[in-house]
Length: 168
Image (tube, rainbow, N blue to C red; front, side):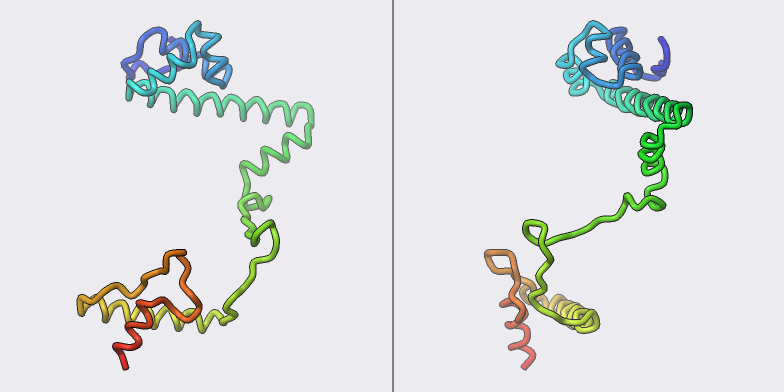
């Protein structure tokens, strides 16, 4: 059959389904086109590693077919919107689509509760790392124990305070 490699141990029905998938691009459409059901497809996925791999390859071929068609339409029809979308996918660093923005609750600003400089934070991390190394070599209890709410207070956790008390 068509573009499904013979390397896979697949039934004729499975091959028909995967061939249809590469043409129509959806599981429900492939099921209708191949005369099977989407439920049968999911059973094959569950029961056969060969089918799982062949399915992954068929999906890649289907996606490639879609991109090729979109590119042809965009160029032939000078469809600027289509070309912009394709360009964003092909060149995310150029078109800024791999940027991430973070915000606080309800989209508001992120509130800073402890306004330390980067240098102060780095110094604190170095100090904690040194204490951890010392504590680990002595076999004592862990230095970072968070309270039940999972958030350490700005003065340090109980474990850190115990270590500071041991140091003095």
